[in-house]
Length: 180
Image 1 (cartoon, helix red, strand yellow):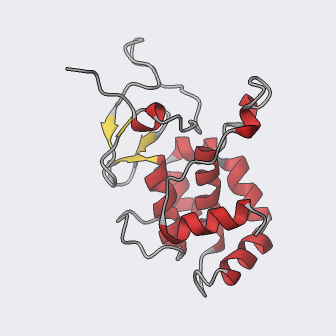
Image 2 (cartoon, rainbow, N blue to C red):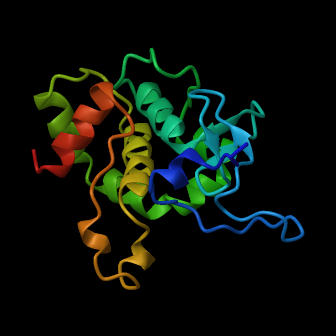
């Protein structure tokens, strides 16, 4: 029987976190540590984290979708997990929150652009801007390599965007990144 690995690692999804977990050297970042409670893919510590509140193992693409749904952007049919606020997200998933703070703050500081795209796309008339900035920042960390990798690998900036999200959230991300 073949060994199973992390779905995101196998599909070339950049990890937003730096592996800091060790277990006597028994595993590497691409070794699966659990199955996502939302989407059921196998995930490593570089692409998932245990929710401190519920104890559920959540892959980071499901977390981004849950943040978007919590912000009022998606219909929520795809995920059940919800976050009441940025603080709630940061307390429940501290490793991901810390690793994505720069990207999340970038979108929080560019809230006018987020608002403009949301309104032009008619995605939602009332949304939670801070939680949406969190969703977009986490999504960006999965579709673009970590900032520090840009200087190490010459062709990193041409890394293709990966469609991981679907629905209105994917539409929003596409419009945001096409200057639309």
